[in-house]
Image (tube, rainbow, N blue to C red; front, side):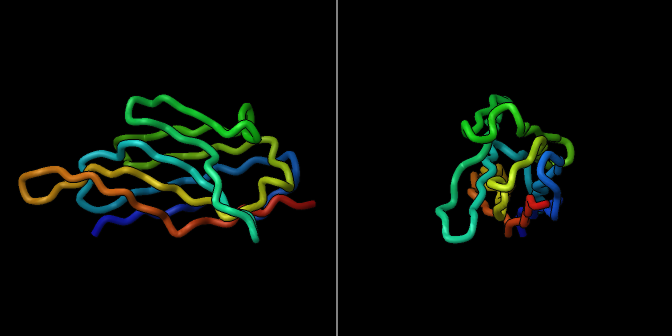
Amino acid sequence: QVQLVESGGGLVQPGGSLRLSCAASGRIHRVSAVDWYRQAPGEERALVAAITSDDTTNYAGSVKGRFTISRDNRKNRVYLQMNSLKPEDTAVYYCNATLIVEYETEYRYLQVWGQGTLVTVSS
């Protein structure tokens, strides 16, 4: 079964760094576009970073210059490098990926959410 799992969250001090990973597993031909979202307590889930199938990247203004999204197509993984973390970055981070999966002799596109990983930025 196709699955998407985030990892790498944890507690970090302001100014510190974390690298989140989003790993896709299953009968996957390719990980296409991937978005990173975050959701703080009591807040709406918000888009943080995005990477397209051709590696075009976009970032929310609040994280631009601090976060970097990248991918390793061979490993079916996408990363979010987070530097200069601020307390307001505290949230559960989710990846949302468009996966090209094998179904019999054809390919299909699936939109899949990960379970989330908690990032806490606090002194």
